Image 1: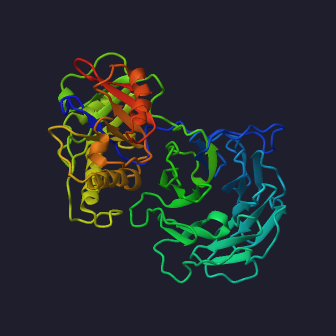
Image 2: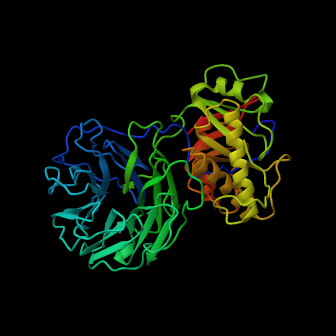
Image 3: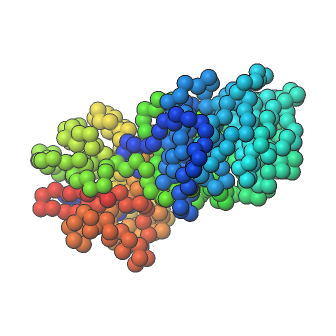
Length: 514
């Protein structure tokens, strides 16, 4: 950034992006499917929905919205959701077993008028979308449509309550999971293992089916992930301090990745599951469930509307702020990893106004102090420390640290990086873990110059928004946005999608929202 570098910039870090997401929590007035339900998003991108306890729906990655109970007075809160097989609809289920169906999801029955021994805690749909099962916390099963009853724990004395279920790929069976990770298999569902005899740090909150019904994942409230059968482990939040417990999770269709969310709607992604945003804050009601959805791949809830214009400023603009109208206002927190804070941060944040984003400048360091999620890697340790340090500096300055953050990864006379691109990537990932997972910042992205990014971190391309610097091309916001595809066509690899581009003027760094 200006004054810190006339050279090129590089990659910012976090599995999340930009601002206060204007996520769609749309209200539905009817629980009946429309005569002609909208078609599912025509894309191969795996996206996701979140649902709150009032039935409000939040759509990400271009997933279509089909309706919600967000404006309806419910007898009992919503506790989960399930999508139809084509992704063109979904069901919501309340704790009394009331069913609310949208899109091409049809109503086959509910326990809403029944007196239940224990509340409903989850549901699963049959593969063809012609039915569904509801499960209560005592393991009682209620089957509707073409969903067959294969057994339950309703008459058993359980060590821990049932918290969820998953169906096999052919719909010929299902698993139930208890809070201690005990597994109960029925129909053609096979037993592949459990955590029932293990001492867990936190209880199990959900289970996810693996491919072809030959395995499953168990998810704990601390973000721990346990994989059994033919499922693969792609990472977890186990051991990483998180602000709020994980409440729901879902997998990609091929189970080669998964998402998790806490009650605030903060989404974390692993494996091939791409990050498309988190819920806005504050929420009217907490998030209680999520489901995979077909999407168009667009990041939902950018920091700024397309075409917005503004500036980024740092210690070098302490006494000379840009004048005139601006929407974008990105302010430096730290001038180097774990270094002294920008002394003008509070004044510059005031100048930024409602368009405030924050950025922190990174340079390689190593630390032997083990940090969460780093598995002893000293670069990751130092990156984590840099992220926490920057967050604390923003809070100490009285600046709103919950806004979107950017990790500044560049190569200039001030910064220094390891000769190992892997270690540099680990450093950036450590900072990402600290800001997104531990500090709970919903949106974190990477700022970098496309010409030098890969020389610093190699092929490290986390699924996060990209703030692209362009000092070599035409100083045009829209033109530079289009240049992103040109760089990719030349074989360069970046985070994405591009959200903001930066280019130089005579005095200030100017920014344009793609």
